[in-house]
Image: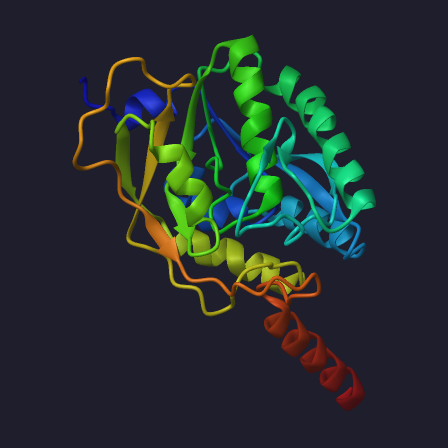
Length: 274
């Protein structure tokens, strides 16, 4: 099997991520190298103030080829059954809220419509993996939309190697028929921290404030259909494994909420002092 190369993956490449800050968390090694980065979702039903805050981040982003589709998140996080995840054509089946499922399903068509013209003519697309990194329903939805567009537009599709105790059940289902083709690159922690500071300053950082980047991250080439020939046993691919809370409550706190509360309180104190 021919070894993969970064030059091959990054040739006329576009990075597509679900949310602002995903580009720094899961793709820092390629963020400066790709031709452009597309953030799919900008607004949030749960946090309406994020739209303006994220727009400011785009204007001040240290990587200047970052743009957005401007879609609104469906508020679907933690609404799938991650103990027994079931795939649908548009993402994961949602079992907690019919209104949220309708929005989530509608976003799949919006993703296809918005991404199609932007990806026409590109050679490579890099994106989330089929199990949604740590386990996010919209990461999986973006991946599935790109799988559909890959068949139509003919680009090569690559995905990340992040996983968690929350999403590993879905990951294990996928890798049973997966060919071990991947390449590994050093992460750019300095760039990741610059982007993190930007989102924190604008109160729209969604991950843990004390997060430490892995030294490396790997990208798998998505071959689409499962191979006909039996796969060799042994080494498959490396995982960057994350520890997540496994509560199944709908109101489970999302990563980053403590930091946002601290920064909000600090600004209130400064305003009072002033």
